Image (cartoon, rainbow, N blue to C red; front, side, top):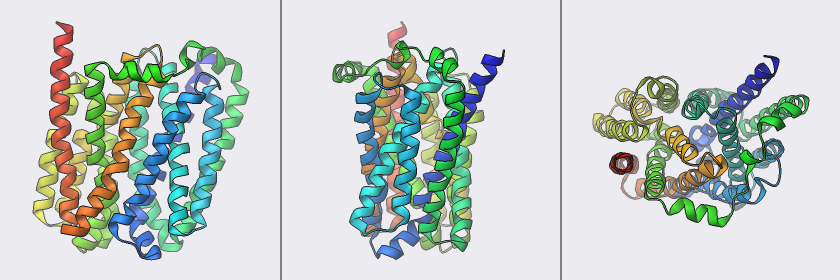
Length: 395
């Protein structure tokens, strides 16, 4: 019984890490207007910040492929948190724009490594409840996303944007101390549960085999276009309300309610609906299309806030369901099942923020946000095809 309690303690720490991580990722969307003013850059240039984060995230996939199976996952977790803290500190120095892009890439490398490891570890420690465990994990990420914009907006009233990033660096360093002490204390128990099998090495041939199955290709395309929807909203919705609708007080809340919807989607909606994951994704993203179009056509801050909430609530479970499917289809190597879908998601984050920023610079920010609706339509179509493909495989 005590061993099980300690195991739950480790899982709780992993959930806490995702909450802090989810909060930290909102710093860009919350502080983007201040960063644009500091560097005197365009929206397209500002869109490079999350793109370089994603460039680093893509590099993290190869880091995972090299080190997983060779170094214990828990040690890799500690290392990734340490270097993430260092990277955030470097951003807080406010170096020249070209250098800060590299710093954001480093944040991407170490935050994505931490993210993928946590997802893989939860799948290893909860093998009979993978979908539920990962949905709850990403629900904690969503709660962090909900809290982040409000917390950072309030911090930025008294601190500069660089001081906010310094505060984030200290928070991750403090978490690392707690996590390291617990892991060292219960090393024997955790090492037993995380056997060599669950820490299998990943080779290029494994990735090729992953890409040979039609259902897994559809899964990757689904999460790629969903990322286009979510990342466009997360980066630009606050600025849209602040600058285009001229409601600066509601900007942070528009982003926060998006994450409130996402959190509820993962914690309540997805576990409560008994339907295939692919069908949930299809219907949810179709609803989000209608909500976003309605919000944009309303031309009001309140309408946009409501639309943001509905978008998060209807489709926020997409990423955890995709990751859970990847792990369920690759139970012998959950790191692979986690890593390849994340690679597709990271690629999406590299493409869509600057693309939507460029569209906003050329035609206006409402058209930049409309790109999210296009991505949601494609996501719904692809997940519908995936659902039909899975049903045909079962026959």
